[in-house]
Image 1 (cartoon, rainbow, N blue to C red):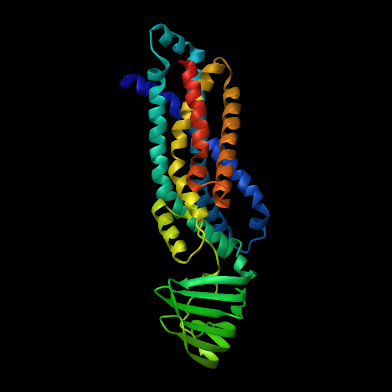
Image 2 (cartoon, rainbow, N blue to C red):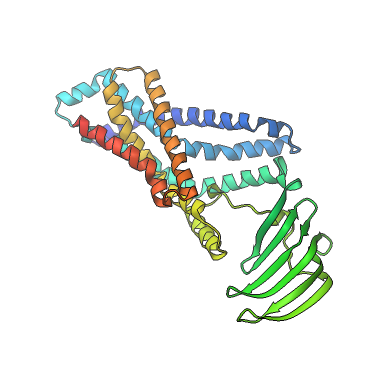
Length: 358
């Protein structure tokens, strides 16, 4: 059986790497053309743009692994049928399940490698590429202004402002609250605040400093003309941006959820992303299991038909992933159910296909 497994693996890996390269390139080029206008007008150097594009490759490659696995399953099974080997195996008394089980083990092995890359290579590369995009290629902070913003520059500190102009380094009507064990203890309420580059901190103008007791009662109120604060975070670092789930591993996502829940932020997006990170590697095995009965049903069809079917099934699967993400992010469905929705639907189809073959 080991010899047969190696033989089957040789037929599987060729189409897998072919599909991985082709599909990843197609998706990457589509994303590149979508951003071409911004890249062409970017102030960044060609070296920075090239580095950004290279760092984006792992993201698109890993996203397309289940599609390549499906294509490999279709090509492998179709090849066995066209060559007559499958007919000979049936005549020898082999059942469908044991004969194609090595394909499922190969898909599981690919899923394991994919999961390790998802937790190590992908977050590092994607985070670096997004940093290059935000700071050098498309530096939105240069013109971004945020109205009625609430920022959390520290675990026990919040800054709210009517207007935050990042490029100018100014707050309009800022209020900075200090908490101790979730109890408001100090508040700086000002007309304006400006980032002092020489001092490396924010300076609040025309305001009042209030202090509160442990039971929340106001104990003192002291006006000021200029207050050099202890807020050292520069304007760009204060830009209100949630870290993308693709920039984090599962462990980092859990830490981010705990942080956001600690500052009483809604975490549906992070919970949905966390469950999708766990569910996504299993799609490799599910799509492989679905591809086998599909290939056996179409039998003598050409490779172009198998390629087209891989595109159609993969497009449907990716659509289900996006639907699940939207349902989870919006709260229309619990994050756990939303993340596992595609696996449940296509897993049921695969189960039905195998049962019908038996």
